[in-house]
Length: 488
Image (cartoon, rainbow, N blue to C red; front, side, top):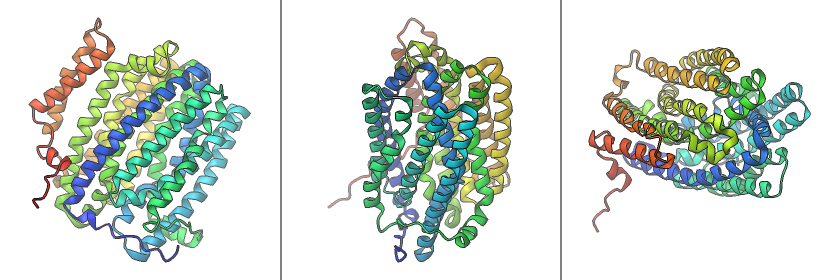
C-alpha cells in the first residue's frame, strides 16, 4: 500500500462544499436520530436488566474505556482530518500510514494502563470488564479513523450509513443478550463485536483513498508528533474532564448516586453526537478555508455558530422539559431521582455545540497552545467543582458542576478566538432570537396536568415557530438542502 495516492479533495474549494455539508449533516443527523430510537430501546432493556448497581458498574467501565480512546487519540483524529484536507500526494499517504501505526501503539499502551488501574481500584470483576470494553474501543476507533477519508471527501452519505449500522447492530446485540440473560461482561463486549462487523464495508469504501496498512517507524512518529504535542496535551485534558464526573462520583459517592448519574451521562453522551455531527461534518471546510480563504473562513464560523446554537439549545430545552419521560423510558421508576440530573446536565449539549465551533476554528488556525490552556483550566475547574459538590449533593451536584463548567468553557473559547481577530466575530442577532424562543418554549413545564409527551411536543413547536417568526433560520437553507435542478 505504500504506492497509494490519496485522491485530491478538490470539492473543499468549491461552492458545492457548503451544499454537500448541509445535505450531508442533515442526513447524518436524521440517520442518527433513527438509530437512536433503537439505541434508547436497547438501553431501556439493558438498564432494567442490570439494575441500579450493575448499571453504575457498566457506565464506570465504559467511561474508563472511553478515557483510553480519548487519552491515546491525543487529538490525532482531528489532526488527521485537518492534514488530509490540505496535504497532497505521497505526503498524505505517508502521513496517514504513520498516524494509523502510532494510534494503534498508543491505544494498546492505554488499554494496559487503564486495566491495571481498574483491577486495583475496583477489583477483578470490573477490571476484566474494563479490559473487554477498552479492547472494543480500540477496534472501534481504528475503524473510525479509516472513515476520515469519507469525511474529507464529503462522502457523508456513506458515513451516515456506517454510523447508522453501528447503532442498529449494537442495539440488536444488546437486546439479544438481554433475552439470553447475559452477565455484565457480555454487554461490555458489544463495541468490539460491532467494530469487527463494520471493518469489511469500511475497507471497501476507503480502499484507494487511504492506506490500510499502518507504518511502525518510531523516527517518523517523532517527526509526526513533535508539532502536535501541544494539541495532543490539550485533547488529553479535554477528554479527561468529560469523564471525570463519573469516575469521581464512583469513588466519592454511594453506588446509587453513581447509578443515577450513569443514566443521565448515557443519555447526554448520546445527544452530544448532534453537535459533534454538525461541527464535524464542516471541519474539512474549516481547515481548508483557514489556509486558503480568510473571508470564507469567517463566513463558515458565523454560519456554524448560528446552526450549533439553534440545535444545541433545542436539545437542552427538550431535556429540561422531558427529563422525567427520558428516565421512565430508559431506566424505569427505579431511576426517577435521575430526572433532575438529566435536566441540569442537558445544558451541556448547547454549551458543547457552541464550544465545538470555537475549538474547530482554533484547531484550523493551528492555535494548539491556546486550546491546551483552555482545556487544562477546564479540567482543573471540573475536578474541583465535582469533588466539592458530589459528596454534598450526589449526582445532582456533579451535574451542576459539569454543566456550569461547559458553559464557562464555551464562553471562554469564543472570547479567546475573537481576541485580536475581530473579523471572526459572528453576529449575535441569532443568539438573541434563540434566547427569546427558548424563554417562550420553556413555558410548557408549567402545565403539570398535561402529559409529558404533550409538553415536550408543545415546547418544540413553540421553539420552531418563534424562530421562524423571528427569521432566525438561514434564508438560503432550502436552496442548500434542495438545490434547483438544472434545465435540460
